[in-house]
Image 1 (cartoon, rainbow, N blue to C red):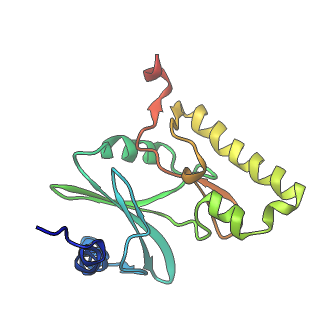
Image 2 (image 1 turned 180 degrees about the vertical axis):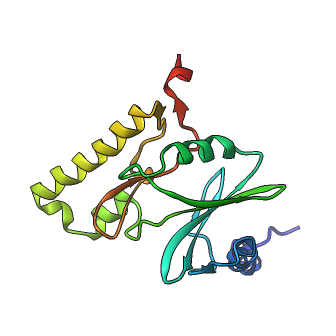
Length: 177
């Protein structure tokens, strides 16, 4: 038996991926999909850009078997912390958690560095990393360690500010001992 060509498999899966946002957004009727296909897929969740009243957000959908409870708890503890992704609202069903999060329109730090000349100015570099340090200091003051800080988990908002994301493997400082 001949193996199925990869292109054929993608052709079959593409319509499924394109319908995912529409399927997921039904749990949040006030929002619409910006893109049908996910903009991020990880081991613990899938992310879609969504919109409500002209403002963009990020919808992160997680299976309840994942570490959803930990991330939800951390996001609630970090409400109103500068330079940290903000939880707007959440909906829990029998099998999934839907997190509506603030949206950083310029994407991941690595891509921002490639696409922008922002870091050509030394003052911008110092300003950016001071803000990042402020966010981390506040996270630590609240007793949380991110535990997975890397360029992919720092995104950049429309004002060129860093935003720390992805708290699903974070830990309470006392739990590390």
